[in-house]
Length: 324
Image (cartoon, rainbow, N blue to C red; front, side, top):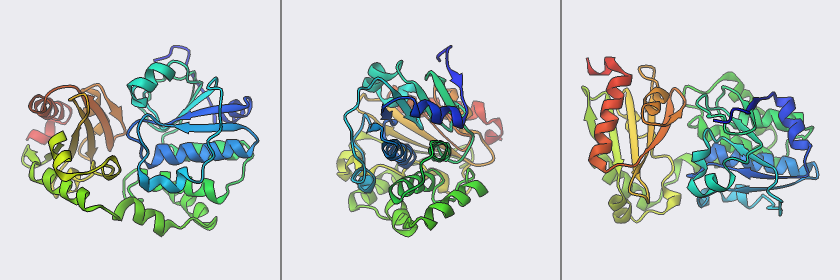
């Protein structure tokens, strides 16, 4: 945590962005719709003010977001001025990017209350998606929304609210979505691409993962492991991997749903999803992670069986009533 981190307002964030001629925009690893939509919306807005901007990510960007990347111009930038969007911790940039950029970030725009305050300046708002404060910053910069920015922002808020199904959806979320649709955003196309279309390999991976799902505490805890061997057998590529985290929580009666995916280092990326009975961020914090009350995550660098034991113990400690 940076002791020099300064909490700032929307207007101060806009002034900060307008005070420099070029910006490097960072997203988190394993990129999702919010980090990408927020980043590309901000990139386009900066470019419309005559500034140079470029979005980078440590991991490949899934093909389904091609409509965002193809509409973006990637300028050559000095990397002297850096903004991170939807990144609660510099570790979430990925090990390589964290080493290069983690201590050089001038501004972070985020919506995670677990933000570690690693940037020099932080615009943090408790809202549905990082795209919400990003949209306010764009307005404060004096940039009107065009179709490219609108599509990026809509993608961000739709994906981070589960197509407006999650508890983080608010009236403000719907108002922004309506404004974006009035600008010509094709919501049905984006939502079908984000939520409905699956490859046959993805369906095979889901079959394998569902068969391996474990239940604990009177079926109130569901844990779905996805190992490297499952990924190999299913033949999935990275583009097929997004959107798996909510599946365990979809089972009737489950209070806490956990999806863990084996990573290249032999550890596991863990995603927590909860309802009113539990705080996902509390569970994740016990394992060195963080996030929101209903959605959080962490990384555990242990073998599968030990990881499973740690998860069960963490849930029992964070949600004592689940064991009753």
